[in-house]
Image (cartoon, rainbow, N blue to C red; front, side, top):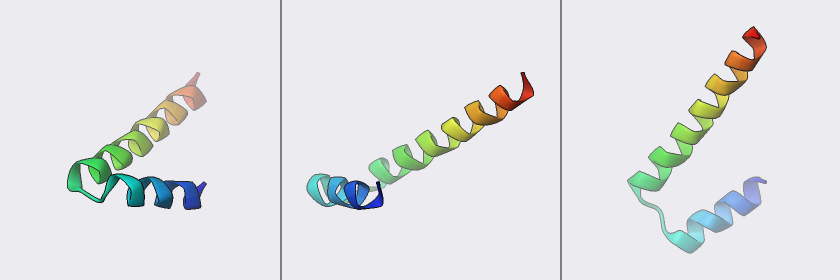
Length: 39
Protein backbone atom coordinates (compact mmCIF):
# COMPACT_ATOMS: atom_id res chain seq x y z
CA UNK A 1 0.00 0.00 0.00
CA UNK A 2 2.71 2.48 0.98
CA UNK A 3 4.94 1.50 -1.90
CA UNK A 4 2.12 2.02 -4.39
CA UNK A 5 1.42 5.44 -2.88
CA UNK A 6 5.09 6.35 -3.25
CA UNK A 7 5.03 5.21 -6.88
CA UNK A 8 1.93 7.32 -7.52
CA UNK A 9 3.64 10.40 -6.09
CA UNK A 10 6.78 9.77 -8.09
CA UNK A 11 4.76 9.30 -11.28
CA UNK A 12 2.59 12.40 -10.84
CA UNK A 13 5.18 14.65 -9.26
CA UNK A 14 4.94 16.16 -5.82
CA UNK A 15 2.86 19.26 -5.40
CA UNK A 16 0.94 20.82 -2.56
CA UNK A 17 -2.51 20.15 -3.95
CA UNK A 18 -1.96 16.40 -4.19
CA UNK A 19 -0.68 16.24 -0.62
CA UNK A 20 -3.62 18.28 0.64
CA UNK A 21 -6.03 16.09 -1.29
CA UNK A 22 -4.53 12.95 0.20
CA UNK A 23 -4.74 14.28 3.75
CA UNK A 24 -8.32 15.46 3.16
CA UNK A 25 -9.33 12.03 1.90
CA UNK A 26 -7.74 10.40 4.93
CA UNK A 27 -9.49 12.82 7.29
CA UNK A 28 -12.89 12.36 5.64
CA UNK A 29 -12.49 8.59 5.77
CA UNK A 30 -11.75 8.91 9.49
CA UNK A 31 -14.86 11.05 10.00
CA UNK A 32 -17.01 8.48 8.20
CA UNK A 33 -15.54 5.77 10.41
CA UNK A 34 -16.43 7.75 13.53
CA UNK A 35 -19.97 8.34 12.26
CA UNK A 36 -20.42 4.62 11.56
CA UNK A 37 -19.29 3.87 15.10
CA UNK A 38 -22.06 6.09 16.47
CA UNK A 39 -24.86 4.20 14.72
